[in-house]
Each structure stands twice: as C-alpha cells, then as structure tokens.
Length: 415
Image (cartoon, rainbow, N blue to C red; front, side):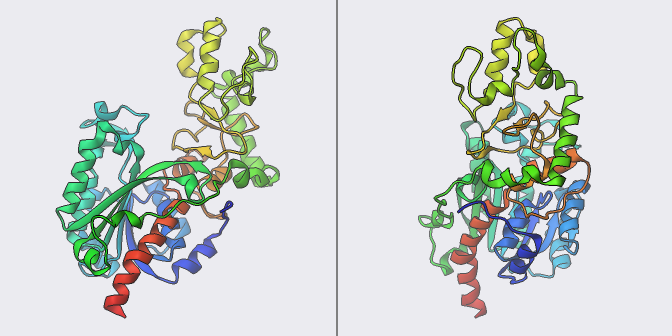
C-alpha cells in the first residue's frame, strides 16, 4: 500500500464499532492505541506514569478511564472496577514495557539492575517491568496479551531474559509466539523493527482451533509496497505550519553548542561549500560515492579528524551519530532523543534541509493521524513520537488477532 493518511475522526468511526475491547499499559502518547482503534478496538483503560504523555493521550481521547502512576501501584482489581469487566472477560491486554535496557545501541546488560533516570524519572530495574504486566494478566486473565519491545530483546545478550518472560507468561496458562515486525512492511515509512510477543489463553487457543504449531499464523503478511520519506512528507514542504516548525528547529540547532558542526563548515577555507550534511548528498571529498541512507556522518567526521580539521576530542560532541535518508527510502527508526534538536544535535535529518524532522513530519513518518494533537514543548512533542509504537504496524497485527482469535471466540460464546 502507498502511504495511508487518516484522521482522528476516521479512527473514531472504526473504534466506535467496538469489535473488541482492550486495556493498555506504558501507553505513552497513544501510538499503540491509534493502531488498535483503527482496527476497531475500544479502550477500557490506560496506564502511563508520565503526566506529559497522559496529557497528549487525553488531548486525543479525553474520556478514557486511566491511572497516571507507576504500574507497580496499579492492581487488576482497580482496573476491573474502573473499566467495568470481570476476570476472564477482557479481550486484549496491551503493554510496551520500557526498552532502554534491551536497546542494541545502549549499554545492554551493563545497565541492568541499577537505578537510573529513564523517561524523566529515577527508576530501578526497569528491565523487570514485564513481570508487572504478567502480574496484572494473572489478576485479569485476558484472552490475548500483546507485548511490544525493541528488537534487542531477541538478541543473544538478552535471550535468557526474554525466554523467562515467555516461560512465566505460559505458566499462567497461555500459548505464546513472537516475531520481529518491520514497520515499512506494514505501511509505516520507517525502518522500525520491534518484537511483538502475542500470548493467547490456553482455553481460547483450543476453542479457536489454534495450537503451538499454528500460533505464528497470527502475525500478518507484509505488504508489497514499502512507503518512503517522499510518500510521507514531500507535500508538507510548502505547508505553512510545517515551514514554521522547520524554521524553529533550524534556529534551535544553529544556536546549539553543536551548531558549528553543521552550519559552520560551509565557510571553512579548506572545504568550501562542504559539511556533514552536504557530504551525505552522495559524494565525499575524494569523489567517492557514499552509501546514502546509512550512518555516513560518522565516517565524514573520522575523515576530518584524520585531516586535522576536527580535534579528536570534539568528535563525540558533533553530529557523528546523525543520518540523512534520501527521499525514496524509508526513514531510519525514529527515537525519543534522535528527534530532539538539543540532544546530539538530532539524529534523524531531513533529506534536503539542515535540521531534524518537524513534529508534523515525524507524525507522518510514525503513521499517526493527520490531526493528532501533541502537547508540550517541541522537545516533548518529538519525544512522544519517538517513543511510540507505530500505529499502522499495530493495526495490521490487531486486525489479524481479531479475525483469527477474538472474533472466532466471541462469536462462538456470544452469538
């Protein structure tokens, strides 16, 4: 499919069909909920501990029952009373536990079992929060559990941790399967890879005709067309609101401590009309064609260090982690910090301009509704987007789970 554009009203029309109900944890600004609602889901309850994220969620769905608190302080009984369902009745429990401990770009196991600041608050052992989801699942016994996390959770350094998650979920009475899904296989113009763990209650598995060998069929087949940056945002380049955001970002980046690395090199006497972004247009300073779309800013800086243009100690304070993806490819995976102009100067650069994507562009690249409301400062808006589950990816998965599990089961017992 080509890039799919939709609005909050489109999403509401689908959600009002109430094909299935769900509750959601670590809900953030509502990325996963956007996907579930597009698939016809009705949210009975949401939990998120950051008020700034709850503000964004409520701005779009103001009547959602919710608790803004650490999941450790929330009980299944509270949820059932607030949302109005009994144990075993809930169709789907959704959760996206914090991912920094498993990120392939992070400290991996070295950062486990420690207190650290994550998402604006001091937390300890955030790699263990999946067991809070398992606790609530035990107290509510939904038909289906969907847990999303970074691809790094499936890597060797986290394998034992991941297998324990699966084992402890299955011990509750669930069949579990998992798969890494790529966003650009499901209408998202972004190379976003995330692992989705789907668990179906044992009695439901039997009633809908599944077994441990066929559980993997719950994952949707990829689309044939991979949407690109051009599909998503080219038409926004003349949009007044987007141009205003672009100007604000450009000024923020130009005036930051790292601004000289991207805006100052144009006037360098040894390298006229050059710079890390211009170096990404396809040719380096020796005439060699660069690998566009890959992390080629880093090699550019290493070359300048070797030539004595940049001091070795300055490299890490530059844009060496930045990437520019050309118009006709899917963007790299958007991140909380990579969209923020004040952090590392931003990692996800616009194809033609010396800046990160605007919030309006980032919404498109994350496959959010056209009129999705974002609250807070520009940094807070960018953070909300970078932390989200890509809605269209979640919609494809929710559609499949609904058709193959929830619909079949509910029709059997509810007519």
